[in-house]
Length: 465
Image (cartoon, rainbow, N blue to C red):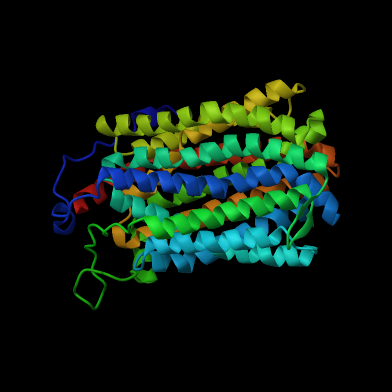
């Protein structure tokens, strides 16, 4: 492990970018940071859904008479898998057409289906609507990351990514606090009667509210955000002999990724293992209910308050650390932060499910999550740093494909372990710890293998600009 501290690939001196980018002014800071703020709100709406759904998963399971693995597939895993596969073709559109329209329309569709699923009367209807919702959110991630690369210079991109991920922090914190209190109030009422809708159970009211919020944010993005001019579009499409202004052929993208495979494969595989563990968060509320007898409101308020205070600081520290190491000449700076965040969180993630005290478990879980968040902004920026503009949305889609597929597998894996390995719903704690015990070290090892190749890829890309 001592080799890690010696990997400090020195970046080349600053050189002119391509002719296309050198003469083009960057968008105004005001609009760029407005876009980041809007994306942060979008991230909040997207990432608030899993923890809030986790608050009500026991009620959904009881109402539809499901087992752990079945409810995980119904409310989370299958829709996320559809989202992941649909994002691949949609990402090609993001490399050629309006990215703000792709993002906005996706949120509109997601909002409409989310609200509709709240009034579904059967498991089959609920399942079909959730699948359609997965299609609606498929283009958001790749188009968002592509736009950020045209809004900020490379040196400022890690900080922009970190600030955008404030939405993720808010989703972790505010969604648990507000969602738990909202659910507690609804639970006391038992049902809510709405015009044209009728009576709704607490979990249905919450899903309806989330859907309407997604719809509103989608319309705001379409109506107020400006599409930034694409920068440094210097690749040539074979046969044309001119700079590419349409989606680069998949064959050319695969060739580029193959040429840089020593940098790419550890990033993908490590991300996959990390996201498998990340997906277990859907079960955190159920874990506290089954293990310690805490209500969703009690867990949500306590855990949400911790996340709200500590998570933003973790994100900022990760972005600051990546920038500092970059200025020191470490070309692998962004990915190095990801490696150390993965390494340091493992003991906390494994231990939280095994301790007998709920507050100790809470402290361990919070520490694990905050350490992991240090790598969130740098990991997103790391991909952008070695990807040409023309390929950015499509390669980002492949990155998000791995993120989504493996994160969706996490809830199902935990449910499957409790149903078929431990054969006891109260063994949820062991299923959570086992998942982290296996996935965390594998991710750490793979990231370590890829550090040096990643730094070399950053240097090559810098000379090409």
